[in-house]
Image (cartoon, rainbow, N blue to C red; front, top):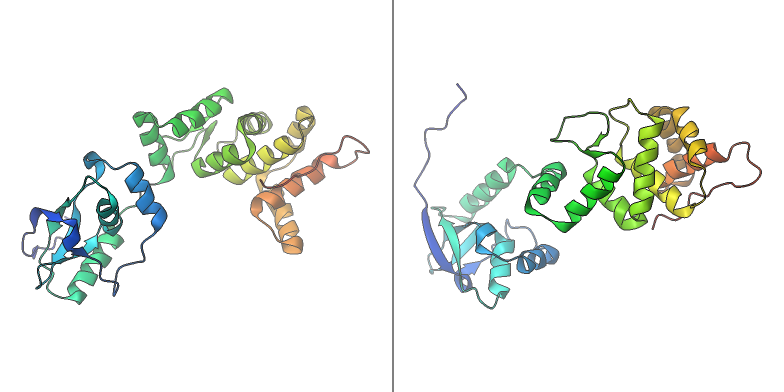
Length: 266
């Protein structure tokens, strides 16, 4: 049996609290991030607002210990005057701060893979677009974190960035080439490699795909990254840039014309 804390404390109450009575104690709260408030406002709906956690004060106000961005968004919404709240029995700033730390320490962040699949189920256009590009290259996202298989990628953020920076065609070409170069490697669809190749395809429309396949097939990912690290030590830059330089150098070896360039990061 796991260890259980039997001292569960006083039960909180569930209330609708006027937003003008809710304050933020900056002794322990983080600074407001405006882009998060804007995102909540843009998608405001009670179905996914949830209950904020508040601590009552002697003067009749409340300190927010969890949900300050939602409270801020609610205060800016023209049709919202109250928010649902779990009102706890914290009787001091230190007790509030401890509650804040415990809530945030024990909260498990939703990873990019779970967000992607939730987006697919919800019909999110960006996730559906990404799914279509992956499907075109005979690829997909792993079902969950830690699961790997040939043709699947866990690099959701990298694919999203590659699509935004380099476009659908470059990403499709990159994914297809990786599959052709390392058809049996379950870890082939790495984020840095997808970004680096998409960058090369965008910068070099006439790139010889068969030559590039042979270049990659003749190297392991470890060899490519070791070479790329050499570039980074000499000239700095991102891992994507270093890998793009490495691959273009290998591709251009022995060529006197039709060489490729690693292009701008975009």
